[in-house]
Image (cartoon, rainbow, N blue to C red; front, side):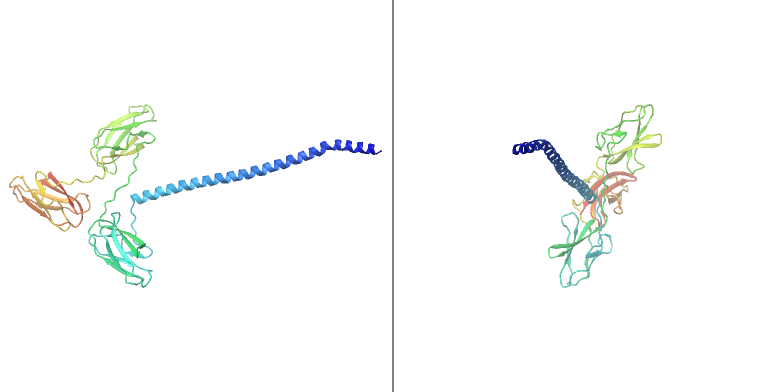
Length: 369
């Protein structure tokens, strides 16, 4: 009887074992799948988060780079005048040469002595003047007139600590145009964006309709009376045209026309649009008496080798045209002598031209400091 019971238990165990292992296997598989799924989800979230973070950092970096570049370009090419700030203000952005400058201050601590400086912008602090507040929280200080053209900073200091800055203009400042050159476009291309004076200019064209005659012009930018050159395509879709060298400094537009329709354009540079002037103190017919010139001092010019009994005209004017009026002096029928031009108030380069009637026969270039 006992043996029969034992045998029955063993048989039941043998019969139920596969079911039990299958259930446990099924449960293990589900747990494993659930674990893998959970682990995969966490990994995916972690990966997405990591990827998102990298993308965001890259985007921010690129945006920061673009912002830095834009800011640096704006700072490099545009000077923004500033007449009001937290503590300082002035009445105007631009002052004439020699005009006194009044700087107002406000919202300062009473009983504290602040220093206000005015100095040349971007020139290492040349021509600095200093004034002090008198312990009052608001008031004004006056600076004597400045006789040099340029941009000037007005700075407020508490001890050695800079607290505020303004930027103003004195006299006339030559503004250098920032021009973005363009040497390649949809239909036109040139090997270089900058050419020397007199250098031949080659313009390649492409992707045009065959059998159609297009015109390519080259002309100085913003100068309608300048010399224009024109060349034509020969009905081919691609090829090149050649322009003779240009001897005038400046920026030049290269334009492609189909009839009267403007299809494309480039912008190139010839020579130096803003050349530095070279001093010329002596000429066959003229010579500057002084080798260096200062503001508020007369300019004396000797003339020589001229025809006696003839009246010649000498004209002195700023080399950077538009900064001041010209001055005129005449010889008195003698072949040699001296003329004296009144003192000038503005620093800069000045041309002195000698005329025989309307014909220019000589020129000097001096620098007034």
